[in-house]
Length: 155
Image (cartoon, rainbow, N blue to C red; front, side):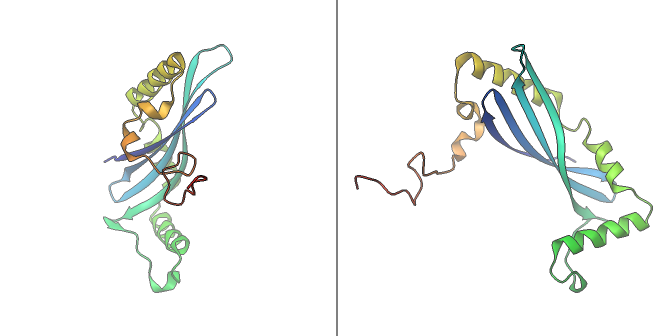
């Protein structure tokens, strides 16, 4: 089971894509894994990429989503630690399972497509966000003038 969500950021000669996915790391354990994909132009002018797992968060254990109970005192961190201890007591090394499941979970086709898009953007000197499908979900910003809190100088 894997679901992905991603965001994109373009820096000077670097395209960074953040992606979250839900991975089943054990028949009874699912984890949300956060990856960062970087596509960049190296010193030789060649396009390279790297995929790094940045973080993981336990999503469900024994088929149930994590729940805060009274002894967690409303703390998600304490709840998470309680579940990790239960998993550890069962002899399951969650960190190793996550590492093994995360390696190769980002499809090579996605990375190749990002590299191709980046190369095309470099050639066309285009704004990378114009090529992203999620452009329709543009977030209002004061800089673009489409934010509700934007104060117009000549209003």
